[in-house]
Every structure is written in C-alpha cells, then in structure tokens.
Amino acid sequence: MSYDLLTGKKGIIFGALDENSIAWKTAFRVHEEGGQFVLTNAPVAMRMGAINDLAKQTNSQIIPADATSIEDLENLIDQSIEILGGKLDFVLHSIGMSVNVRKGRSYTDQNHSWTAKGWDVSAGSFHKLMQVLYKKDAMNEWGSIVALSYMAAQRVFPDYNDMADNKAYLESIARSFGYFFGRDKKVRVNTISQSPTPTTAGKGVKGFDGFISYAEKMSPLGNATALDCANYTITLFSDLTKRVTLQNLYNDGGFSNMGVSDAVMDMVDNQQ
Ligand SMILES: NC(=O)c1ccc[n+]([C@@H]2O[C@H](COP(=O)([O-])OP(=O)(O)OC[C@H]3O[C@@H](n4cnc5c(N)ncnc54)[C@H](O)[C@@H]3O)[C@@H](O)[C@H]2O)c1
Image (tube, rainbow, N blue to C red):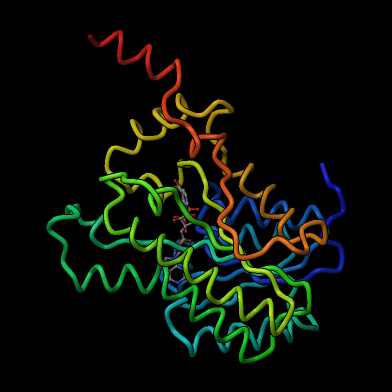
C-alpha cells in the first residue's frame, strides 16, 4: 500500500545485496512511495548481480562504491546528483561486516587488523559518507539520513562480537554528526535499531537461529521483519518526521524494554 510519502524526493540507498537485505525491501518501499534513488554497493557485491534486477524493477541506476573509500563516495555523490537532477533528500546506510565474525574469531581472541577493517566498513564509513555529503552540500534542507543498528550497542550479546562495538560507534556518529548536519543544513540523522533479521549479514552471526527465536519470544509484538524496517525508514525519510533527529530508534517489537516474557519463562521451566 502506498501513502505517497516520498513523491519528488531523491536519494541514495546503500547495501542491497539480495532480496533478503533490509536495503532491498527499503528500495521497493521508497519506489512505491514515489521516491527516486541511486542504488550502490561495494564493487565485490555487484558481482553477485542480483542488484541489477532490483534496479530494473525500481527504475533506478547503480553506481558501485566501496563505502570506506572517500574517492568512491565523492564520485557516487557527484554522479547521483547528476542522474537524479538535483540534491538529495534521503540516504540509507545499510552496511555491516565483521571479519572476526566471518572467520569465527571470538571477542576475546580478535585479530585487531580485522577489527579495524570491520570498524571501517560498519561505522567509519558512516562518518566518511556524511563528511562527503556535508562538504559537498549535497543534501536538501529537511533531508534525512538513516543508518541501521542493533541493540548489542547497549547490551551484551556475546556472539555479536566486535559488531557490538561498531554499532555503539555508529550510533555515536549519528548523534555527533547529526548535530552539525542539523545546525548547518537542517538535515536529520538517526539510527534504527532493528530486530535480528534473516539476511546474509544477520545469518553470519554464530547461533543466529537461537538468537532470532529468543528475540521473537521476548518481544510482545514479535520480531520486526525487514519489511517492517523498510516501512519505518520511509517514515523517517518523509516530511512527517521533520524534527526527529540524533535518535537511536528501536524497531524491535518491544524487545529492548523487556526483562523477561511468559514465553521465555515457559521455555526455561520446561527445561528444568
Ligand atoms: N540482519 C540483522 O539481524 C540486523 C539487525 C540489526 C541491524 N542490522 C544492520 O542492517 C544493515 C544491513 O544489513 P542486512 O541485515 O540487510 O544484511 P546484508 O548482508 O543484506 O547487507 C549488508 C550490506 O553491506 C554491504 N557492504 C559490506 N561492505 C561494504 C563496503 N565496503 N562498501 C559498501 N557496502 C558494503 C554488503 O555488500 C551488503 O549489501 C547492517 O548495518 C546490519 O548490521 C542487521
């Protein structure tokens, strides 16, 4: 269902890898709401080719960019403004990767050059992206920038590993840069803290199946899906949320404020 929330708005969507990606669902919803955008992903992810289908279906163009490269980001933003015919109203940063998680190194046995790489991709890239947008004055007034986070930024989820620290840093960048973007350009910056979601990045976390069913049982409304996240994101891109900024917003079915639920207590009782 379309509410026509984004007609006339233009932006960039990072991170659509395949149809499970949160960015993929968001691209579809933005398109349905009348927004136009450029799709981007790391050149290596392009080789999988799925993004071409998304581009066709949403009538959008693709510009490859490694989000850790200032040069790639500058080129992406210049080209996007040209293709879209004007400055940007929205940007989605939907990027995350930990080499330690991928290679099964535990939090207490990290390879710190992998830690640095994961930080650069998952958190540093958000600062780099906003710095390029800010310096190029690439955002329209009342524009909106959103990045995706996870509750491990606030609470301990041992297998989330160094991604927990990356998400804490990401949320801090949203606040710190959000101040300057708000003051100088009237642009808002927020993070959405999303439920565990079965995507390539999500499923890479050790014990993901147990993790997602635990969260489902803990949340009074159940886990938020990728589509739920897309729907929340379009509200943040719309003019209905103009003065929401510097926030980390939970889209998690209530999980973040729970202590324990009946469903989890029943599970524990049954095991005793
Ligand atoms: N899946 C979950 O459980 C969950 C929960 C909360 C938050 N998130 C966050 O949502 C965001 C999107 O992840 P997803 O779950 O849709 O998984 P996904 O694997 O579909 O998306 C991650 C994307 O990051 C891209 N990426 C990696 N390195 C990059 C680079 N150097 N430059 C540009 N792009 C790069 C990948 O190509 C991929 O498209 C991430 O920030 C993730 O941490 C996911």
